[in-house]
Length: 121
Image 1 (cartoon, rainbow, N blue to C red):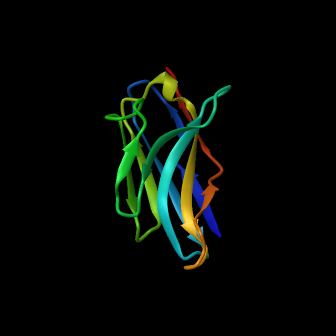
Image 2 (cartoon, rainbow, N blue to C red; image 1 turned 45 degrees about the horizontal axis):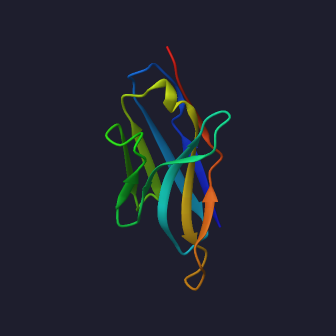
């Protein structure tokens, strides 16, 4: 299985920046897509950005041009650089990974515990 540990959340003023990290560990064959999702109070969890093992990225319209997702396959870590943060970016940010436990397994999905991002003056 895969364990995901997120870090980097916190309080930031509007217009500021934060960088989230998510490190994967455990016993597995491979990890394909990794991504970030977020959930604001009273709202459903939504996609922020994803990146494949081949480094193909995808962004929600609300963050495109402000956020950048990247990954280090050697470290099994995905990053989310968040610039020009807005109060509406406030949410718990969750890391997600699609992985195969064994070479013959189908892909499974797992989540991190979440990290709080609060954008406020």
